Every structure is written in C-alpha cells, then in structure tokens.
Length: 223
Image (cartoon, rainbow, N blue to C red):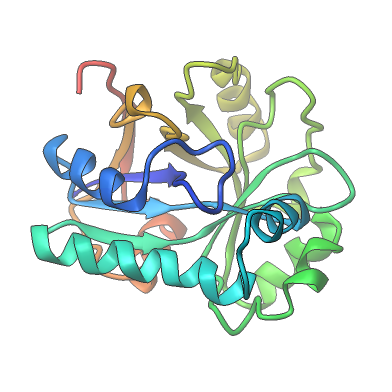
C-alpha cells in the first residue's frame, strides 16, 4: 500500500488550499491506496475557525474527516484522520496518530499541555507522537524521550525542513522515522509516501504498521 501520512485541507488548516473532495480526487489519481488528513488542531486553528463562522470546533474537525472518508470509500481510497498539534508553549508542530475523538474532546486541555506532558499522555493511550519537520526554521528540537519518533522526510516545497539533519537525529537517538508530503496545495500532492505490504483500512491498522516499522518511505517528485 502507498500512503501519505501528512495532508491538510481547507476549513481547518487555514493555510490549506485544497478541499477534502479535491484531496481525495487528486490522491486517487496519483495512485495512492490511503491518505491521512492531519489538519492543524490547536488554539490558533480553533480561533481562526470560529472567526470564520465555524461552530463546534471538535465535532466539525471530525466531520471533515468523516466526509472525506465517505468520498474515499466511493473511489477506493482509504481516508484516515489524525492531527497536527501545536501546544501553546511553542511554535513546534507534532503529528499524532491513534488519538480518538473521545480522547481529545477536552481539546483546550490538550492545547495547554507541554510536549513532555503530551508525550506521557500518548504513551499511556497508545498514541504515536512524532515531531513534524523538527529542523525547520523556528522549530525547537524536543528531548527524544518525549517522542515516539520524528518526521525525517517532509517534502513541503516552500520550507526547508533539513531532512538530512532530521534523519541523522532520528538515527542517533533511535527514534522511529516517518515521511509525508505536508500537502497544502496542488503542487504538493503525491510528493512523498510510505509503502507497506500490510493492509491499512483503519487507524488501528496504521498504528500497528507505524509502531512496528512495517514500511519503507521515499520522496517522489514525479507523481
């Protein structure tokens, strides 16, 4: 299976330029088997959402994923939902896979955590917690013991994520390594993927694959 782990849509990621329907269509055309929508989930995103007429931030976040999953089911693309978190303590971004709708219903509490506190919460609840693009400008590297892993291949073309440094850091501290396109615009579609022989149909499947490193990854600018 070919999977993109890091994708943004309009509505919740204020920097996202593609609707969920467009994302599903483009990724199906690009030959993917599954995608993970990781919209921004933080206090800044919530404020933007409310200022633009949104109501019930928590429910709407998951409704967007459910709607995308329904569209994906019609065309044979598995659509899963996860999170790009940012805690109020810094400008760092993190990816979390396996956190349920119920576990983050008190999202204000999540937003006010430190990375260390969320790392403990993640370990206690079988959530995989990665720092996204940790060596991009304005990022602060987090002590490895708080993380499950880091994103070592981020192909966002409008940022320098210093992927070579991230890979060396992950190997030095034995952190699990993931890749993702960080897709926001049409030119970002399909620029990165993980590949697995394990069938990924839901988040439990994905967590199993990631937790046990049952995948490879690559950058593909030709897709």
